[in-house]
Every structure is written in structure tokens, then in C-alpha cells.
Length: 487
Ligand code: FRU
Image (cartoon, rainbow, N blue to C red; front, side, top):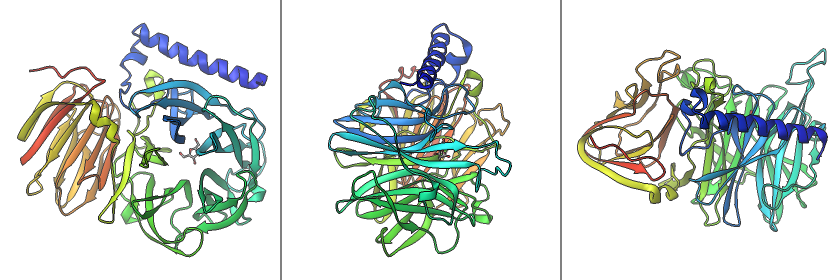
């Protein structure tokens, strides 16, 4: 281990330990800072994208973009969590540090590809060259290097190998090329990366390899008309026979994107061959809430497609997170199964959650409860689109005027919303709603998961008030949380 790696490791461990000790000593910041129970968070500091998601020898691995030294972000490492059920996770430490000339400004996002008992971790080595006179960080002053490191267990690593530099990518691309995702098809390996062309058009770039090490440009994934200026964290997979191409898109403007997040994460259904002739459907958002970006997916050993997103939003000035003061920021979404029903892509919390749920109360038409922050409420057999729920006194979920709304009653930056206002999705009908609440987040699955809304929130009291005339309402506590008090 180099002296730099060694120091970065020590500094990270010191920051993590200080945070933990503050929490144990009852320090206001760490202890009351809205720490989540079910969702993965940074041990201290900042978290963004999920990276290297996989299941190997029964164990789930979730790496994450991690800046331990500043809750508002900084140089990126890869932190590492493992789990046997995607619910109880164990933090194993920061694993990949920016300690090479080709990744010195950050070990950026990437994937895990498993073969022959090894994890092949591909990521983007980011290099910022700020002292250049013509620095613009788009066409000059930046390197996006494709790097490979292998590991049997996510904890012991081979030497990092630099596989490709910007000069190895198509010449019409800007320096924004990143976030490799690798798969194997007909004995050939393919790598998808997100890119911005010199003309400011977002694209997916596909490379191919026979040996996982030597890569050559193969083809592109692009829309007929330009769609945003940059596609980050692309992903490609099949679910229930549908081909799904996912991208986190920056630069969408116009009426359709009004009242939406600054950047979007969504998917196109792909008809044809991603490696040859294909056409793309319209773009659908994975999540219509305030906090959702850069999702990645993987296949479990039992064949399910699981997706995890970053429950946050980059470059967002509109709203904030009230955990910053406590020394940390952001979390992942709860892992979701992606499946296709009647041609529609749906999401639901992973089924492992079912075993942790305990039925607390059922009601017809109305349920009010004050208590535990961690819960699931299922509202089924909704009639006449009658639905309104108020969570934590200020978060309102409501069907009205032909749309499902998620909105806060107060938009002040220090309120429950942290500055969030309204998000919505038009729909003709609602039949059921599932709400998964954690200490500082809510995820809402509407109509069997056809539409999802996620948001962070910061309640003073954990009240639930659901009204849905004629519907069945079931409230569950979740095993790891404390009991609901009986009123
Ligand atoms: C998406 C992203 C990726 C990049 C990483 C850096 O949120 O910008 O494109 O690899 O975050 O942290």
C-alpha cells in the first residue's frame, strides 16, 4: 500500500470513528441527525451513486461513491457494504482510494462483473486539471480513464489497471465519458459508458472485448433527436423479456420537464438489438419524486433484477437535506425488484422485506397512527380514485385532478420538506398504494409499482393519516424498528 493510500485510509477511519463516538456519547449531531434504519447511508460525510452492485457466493455487495471528509461532497472513494438479505447491511470500510495518477481526482462510478470466482470492478478514474489556462472541464482539463481492479471478495484487490483513456474513445466525444457497465453476450464482453459529445448531445457508448481487458469501440446508443447533453450511469438489462436501456440524463428542458428535478433518471424500452439495429421507446422516469438519481442494477443468484438508486439529486439548489448539520448527507433507495407486467415496467421493494414485516393494524377507509418512523402501509382496493395521506404532518400524497401528487405543505428550507415543493404524475386511475417510510425518507409505489415517488423528509412527529374511502389499509412495522406504541 502506498503512503498516500495508507494516509487516506487512516484519515477515513478517523473521521468514521469520530462520528461513531459522537453518536455513542449522545452528541446532538450524529445521534439525532435523522439517521435511517433501512436505507444505506455514508458512515460519515457524503454518499452518492451505488457502484459495483452484485451478489457473489450468496453475499450482496453494495459499493458507494463516498466522500468521508465533507457532508457536502469532495474527492470520491468507494465505500463497501455487504448483506445476506439486502436489509441488514454491514459496513466493511472504504475500499478504493484515489491513489493513482489516472484516478487522483476521484474513483468515480462503475460496476461489478462476476466470472470465474472473481469480481471485475470497472470504474472511471477521474482527473481534474484545473491549472490549465483553457480549463473548462468539458473539452479540456479533465481525464476520464477506464480502470479495472479485480477482487475475490470486495475487500482484497489486484493492482489497478488502466484500460482506456479519452484518446481511446470516439473522437467526437467531449471529455465526459464515464460510468462503465459490463455484461457478456454470446461469449463477447460489452461495456456501456455514458457520454457527452462535443456538440453537447448525451449518448451511450458501447465497447467490446474478448478478454475483459482489451476494449475497442463497438457502437452507440442514441436517440433520433438530441435528448439532453449528458447521459450518466447508463445501464442495460432484460426483465421478463423486455429490453431496458436506462440513463441518468442531464439537460432536458421545456414544458414537459417543468416541475421536475434538475436531472432525470429513466429508461427507454429497446426494440431490436442494442449492438446493431434498434429503436427506442419514449423515455419513462424510474421515479417521479424529489430524490432519485444514478440507479444501477444487478441480477441476483436466484434470477431477479434488483435496482438501487441514489436517493439524492446533484446540483440541486432548490432544496436541501437537514442532515448536513449532523455531518452526513444522502442515502440509497431501498433495493427494488424491477419486473414487467403487461408490457409496463414496475418496481417493488425486494421480497426479503416481507419477512421483516409485522401487521400492526388494518382499517377500512381511514387509518390514523402516531408513532414509529419505520413502517409500510398498504392501501388496496382503492375506489373512485379516493386517496389522501398525510405523513409527518407536512408530506401530502394525494390523487386529484387526474394526477397523483407528492407535495409538502411548507416549502421553507428548514421545514419537514427541506425546501421541496411538489412532484406529480398524471394517471387515469389508482388502484393501490404502498408507502415505505424510514426515519428521513418515504418511497411510494402506486398501482403495483407502475409509478414510484421517492423523497427525503425531516418530520418532527411521525404521524400517519391515510384516507381512502372504501379501501383496505394495512399498517406494518418492520422487524428491525421499535414497536408502534398503542394509543
Ligand atoms: C452521477 C455521477 C457519475 C460519476 C459520479 C461521481 O451522480 O456524476 O457520473 O461517476 O457521480 O461521483
